[in-house]
Image (spheres, rainbow, N blue to C red):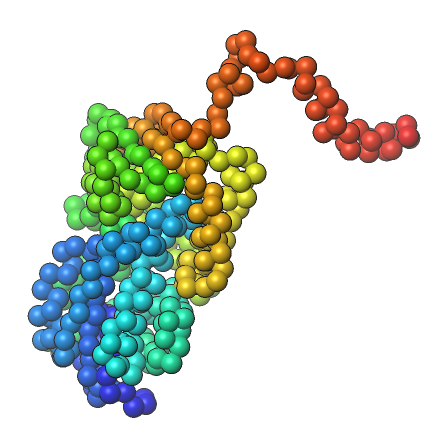
Length: 403
């Protein structure tokens, strides 16, 4: 399989990466250095070092990437309004952040290769590898799922059991999940059939909140303050982005906010059904979009909405470290210069209800828009309509032989 002396492995401690350590040692005979990027998966990091070393890694790095992830990936995507088919890019934004950390450790350790546990069916293999190619083009990439003869998660479990690798899952609860500060995704098992309703009310299915019908009967008001498009305060308390997202996750989860069940179009060509929990992110996207209705002029808002689709697609497709994403960020940052203000929302049983918005840069004029007396001269509309409708009128005259 080629000479590799030292390999850095993207390690989560989950099923895939747990069996990859002994597999790498068996098939490449190399030293394995495990690297876990902490992007807010919380309890999943507990006991990780002991597990990595016990299964054959020479060492484990746990990188604290929470603030980097929030400030440099989540918030830029949110300011862009980037959604991929309503999906708020929770995995898509995390992978380039984690992969950047992998590259840094690989270069520090003098590694020959970087290995990931992504399957050949998914998008994450592309996101990891395009980041590695962008930041360390000389680095060998090992993707076991494209090499080994394991073909299913049941066979992975069999391999783990044969190698005495402890697992936190079993064959009955083996959902494929990805968790970070921004979201939690669920795939596999009963969700593979789109006819099956997700088991939202089953204990243990949802981890970041509750279903709308299990939410409190009383609504809750919140206020988010933005400066130049970035969230800076919640209910009058200033805080950094990561802290604000944690608090919004708790509030949104409590009220059943942010559940998404979609059949999405993967980059590799297939459709895939997934259920996402993004409570805080859903609130932030809604609040930010609400504020922009006040602060952005019509042409800028409409073009930004179009480009948000492009932004979402390149992020979903793993092209974070590209000139196009940087150019789009420059455009977005320019649009955010006046997106400053406060947004009030009412949270109630899965619903986000607008409850007021204000900004010192508001383009809304009550005097102009009012149904009451104002300085607006309604007579001006006549000339505007005549000129705006002139092409339509001339064409109709031509068709009726009146020219």
